[in-house]
Image (cartoon, rainbow, N blue to C red; front, side, top):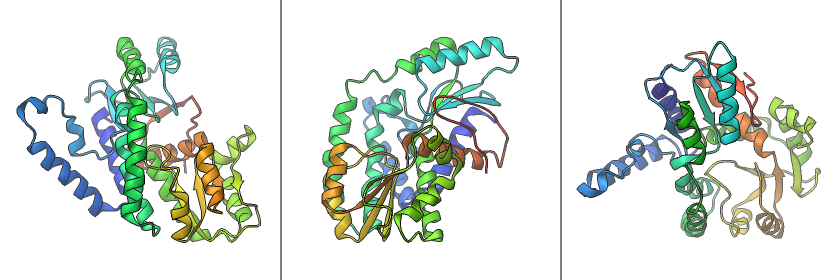
Length: 318
């Protein structure tokens, strides 16, 4: 499979699993095309043309020829300089070289614009009954915070290492997060867990969560108790990073009883408890791994790849 085809396949799978729906995604891409068509000549040079077909700013080919044939990939949740040097070492020692580094968490210019995918979150909140104008205004403040936090980061550090060693590199973030969000949402809708202990049993049946439970990082109830009723469940695992700290009362008012997420900061958790919400932390690396595995399952329906899993990732096929 050519690198460009693999990249576009990841984007397509991400759009297919995006809870905003096909019409909303097409609207976003149409608006981006109109924005591009209205750029001034001196602005075109700086425009990222991937935005015309890819609505996920945190998913990009970071280095490499798009026509490179990809047979063997090394995949990790975080692929930084240490992991890239490991890839270089493996390539010197193995008969079949690794053709591509895939990082889940964004690097390079995909990291620089991570904040942009957070615009996904208000649309999801609205589907659960949160007033869209309230969600957008709260998220606008949070997006500004994340954008400013990313400005001084040395974004291209890992990408420069891959380029220097001549190893193609890409990152796949929101498409994988969309996969795990949609998968868990559909699972809970089908299984209809009554109490939090029932929800926990469902999570711990997945091999990714089972593995991380053995590594002492199991899914955990951090607000509420195991005998609490689940009520309406909101799976909060996509949209770049954590949203507004002020949103939890709005969730409660919209009828949500239980939040299931990858992680939650202390201020966020404090406010969730104030709103009397149940909160289950499924796990960060385990949830990221599940999302990547679901995405790779779709890709491998078309063409098989050889995987080397490091940095928290293990390829588990369904």
